[in-house]
Image 1: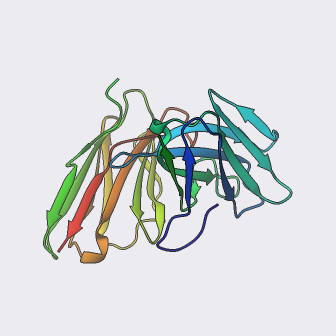
Image 2: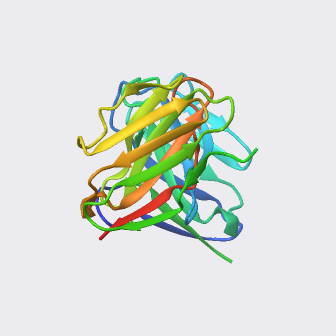
Length: 113
Length: 114
């Protein structure tokens, strides 16, 4: 999950396993959530988004789950590949803002071959 | 599609010098954002432009920071004078939705102020 501080939470998985990355968001008024992937030396890359009127959304090999009751978001990656190794950020639309995003601190995913 | 283009990729300067970071958003995108990323504070929104007009600059840390968007295809972020605590990676992002959906980020400018 996310945390404040110098050290990123880290998740290490074997290639082919499923990965689950968790995020606790802060503002109960936020109604739009996004997951970004950031590889070393690159900018964040959009993965998948979800609105608060949904609790699950699926993409290609990725699923986002939203639990508004406990303000929790998760990203599931199926059949994790070495190319999935990166830092993953969740973001919320800062209390319903139509332009401002609040990003979590990130989780480092390492995929072992 | 070349994506969001930022320059320079790396900038090393001395305290007190002026620094100018540049961004070319994706053609057709009408919203542009400048973010700063540090290990301590993560990704922070500095300023947001919509249709070349600054909408929210509340994230700009101090008067030493300024941003302009003279046209739809170019934006600058200037720091004058720079300080060591400005050292960070600065990202530009754009989107066509007029808001915060599906932002496309550039590769960033790694700024080091000595």
